[in-house]
Image 1: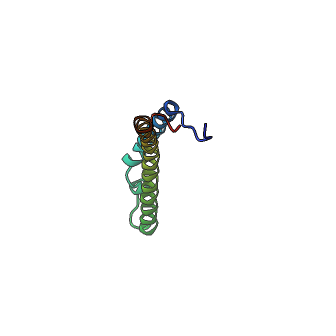
Image 2 (image 1 turned 135 degrees about the vertical axis):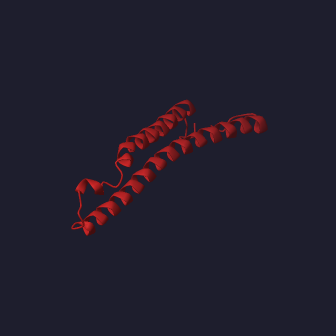
Image 3 (image 1 turned 135 degrees about the horizontal axis):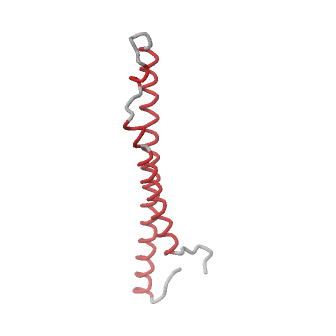
Length: 103
């Protein structure tokens, strides 16, 4: 043992869980997306135009950040799946070329 072992089955399972978590996180944002910019709830008659425009901009930036976070979570799960695949491929190539596994 090298001290750097990957339990591929567990890693693949966790990769799927991370990806599912990212998809669930993205779905949880849907009610916020549906609400729109929220400015109409102020019932603005023009007096609060400056405040409502700042609110709408803050909400837009926040939603963009939350969308990117859900993408990063999904990408992390996908990346871990790639690690598992590359490890399996490397191990198979090692067995094929030198007759033993490197892990």
